Length: 428
Image (cartoon, rainbow, N blue to C red; front, side, top):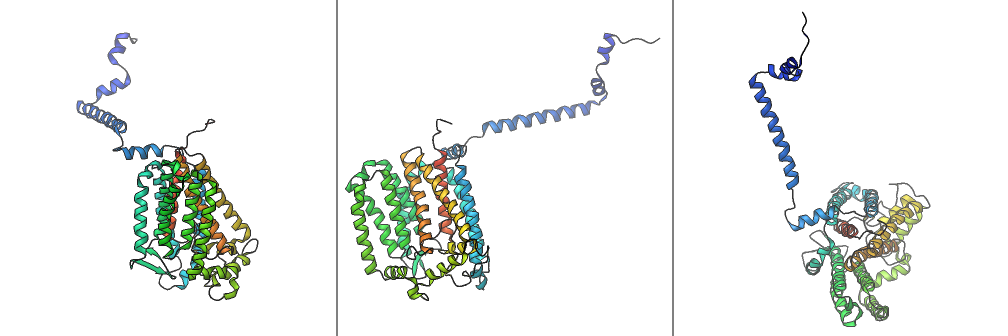
């Protein structure tokens, strides 16, 4: 006789899982229980760690807070694009000089610049996470440090190259001096806005930048002096300096130019060659003439990437001041114009950040940094095209030079942090 399952039988027998568990040995059941409890404890500990991770100090908390803010993506993208194009152009321009130098090899300059680019990008991202308002307390310190370094360049510790003493232990203090002037002028003009509207206040700014110019003139490094003057003037003008102050500034600048022409032989020589470089095409006018030949050889579409002829021991220092001449020869008018469009957009983004900055200090700081890039780009292009006497102005993000590249990327990092702190618009 078949007995049907009743409620009591079902309760006694239990579910299939319970019946399987009941058939297990007590030792296995205890081991499984201990394993389950350990897993639960691990989960609770990991969750507790996530909840308890806190910044160790105020600086770390500030970095964490800044890194979460929105960054100016177009400026970051255009910077990376210019840097990549610049490295490719540098590889092409520097290959012959490295190839014919038995000690270094054809890729020497490119590898060194690539390493400095990586260092600069890391520093750029780190600086973009530091609140730019902290630089107010460092402005005078950086000014003093750069002053000491410029003095040391003139001592036997400095390195002389091409009749100029501009290097100290392998780097150029003039690049640090540019950032020092920007920070100091922005800090002073934002703290005391009335100082830029009075003659006594302006004399302080003139004295601060005049010390640098005097030291740079002794190297000599006239291009850096011109860049500092333009940066300082633009910052003061944006800060509220009266327009009529331009009259004495212009007169003073003219007097200084005349004195420099008659007292500094290299200035007089460069101006004379600028007016007609073919007067001495084999000596003092050689650089300008070879640069014009390279630009003219490129035509509309260029000879092709890597196909420049002037870089083969004709154009002096093709990877430095005259790298744009090689670009014109290889990529032609069209390629050079596209690069200029990238530079123009970069400058536009910089001034856009300055216009929308959260405070006066951020506006002046972004203006100074962007103006440095803009004027240095224009100065280099004017030199290679024969519109300005030959100077030592490099092309930002393109010309060979580790100190200049790292400092330029650090300054871009400051711009990116200013963009992080721009207050949201009404549309957002």
